[in-house]
Figure 1 (tube, helix red, strand yellow):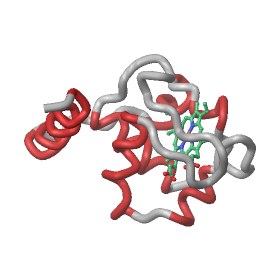
Figure 2 (cartoon, helix red, strand yellow):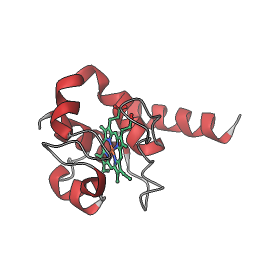
Figure 3 (cartoon, protein in one colour):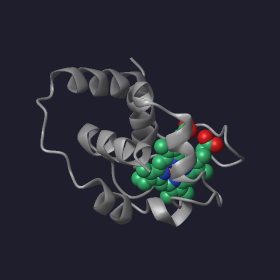
Figure 4 (cartoon, helix red, strand yellow):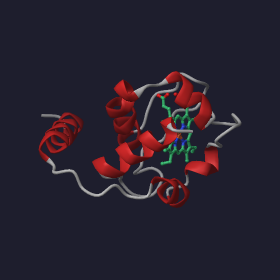
Length: 107
Ligand code: HEC
């Protein structure tokens, strides 16, 4: 199995079996994980405004977006791709990634 496939399989299986942990504080996490280096809530700079993301996506997209936070995305809003958590410093757990996405969708 390619390492990425293995990683995805691990993430999927832990997402199904992991017990619900207490959610981390997403606003504090967004600050400490550098989200505001590129994003703002109201304005689009090099990255789309969190308000625009909240308009475009629904709860059905949480899993997909959480995986993008963990593993990085492709560019489809602009010319730059969403970097992976690892590129931003350290990996995000499933709970942290989901908490961040749910927080973004509330903006
Ligand atoms: C280095 C700049 C940068 C940082 C730091 C960053 N982002 Fe992004 N993010 C982007 C860019 C650029 C996009 C748009 C990518 C695209 O075109 O799909 C994006 C897209 C997204 C998307 C939407 C993905 C999609 O497919 O539509 C979400 C959700 C998101 N970011 C959340 C976050 C969160 C939460 C953090 C903090 C953990 C964060 N970003 C940190 C640059 C950044």
